[in-house]
Image (cartoon, rainbow, N blue to C red; front, side, top):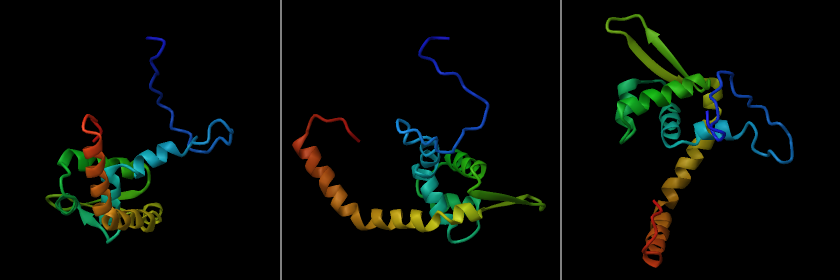
Amino acid sequence: MSPTHTGVTAAPADLDPCGQEDHPDCGIRDVLDRIGDKWSVLVIVELAGGPRRFRALQRAIDGISQRMLTLTVRRLERDGLVLRTVYPTVPAQVDYRLTETGAGLTHLVKALADWSLSHRAVIAEARQEYDRTHPDHDIR
């Protein structure tokens, strides 16, 4: 193993803030990485309206692939934000709903989504201006 390689640990992440002055993000980054990613926010927004079946979620979230939706709901389920229920029918029916913890996020996520919608034109203009004044950049 190289000196710069970090090993993978099987132990669960310690999410408690450590309180050390030089580690202000201990325990926070892991959670924010999950709930702040593009697809998780959209899944939470959709599930805020109530339980949804997989295909209904996929149709509601423009551009998400089946694989990415599967990974996203599994990660949210692992984090205790989404509950997956399988019904004993033929074929099996599965729905997804927010847990109490996940539902506690909805007002925050919806506020972010609302803010995004109301500011998208201003952001698009700022991007165009930046692109015009920095023609050689590779930021996307």
